[in-house]
Length: 127
View (cartoon, helix red, strand yellow):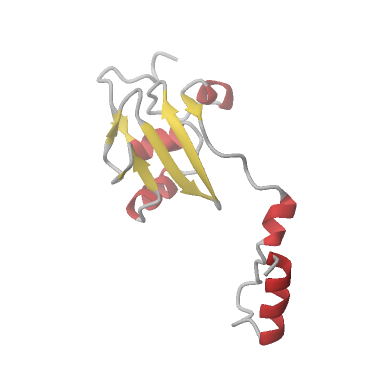
């Protein structure tokens, strides 16, 4: 495990997000940074921005927001048990299937909702 830890005390934010398994690939992590979906201590992060122990990293990925505090820096991808020790997860709980269905997600490519669809959505939302 000593090989994964950095000696300098900082790591690239995209590499750290990937190495602790918050994203599947480093390129997805870098793309999320460029799109503004990653914030370090409340400010937008570029892929090469450094993170250190104690920083708060917010990542919006796969339809939910992850809020983590950096405990340990790693630059190589580690297994899930080791990755869990590298951060403190302060994320809100993931929405249940019932809550996700209540949002009224439409199939991609179906076009704009009709008047009837809008009325059904409003009924679901309790309006």
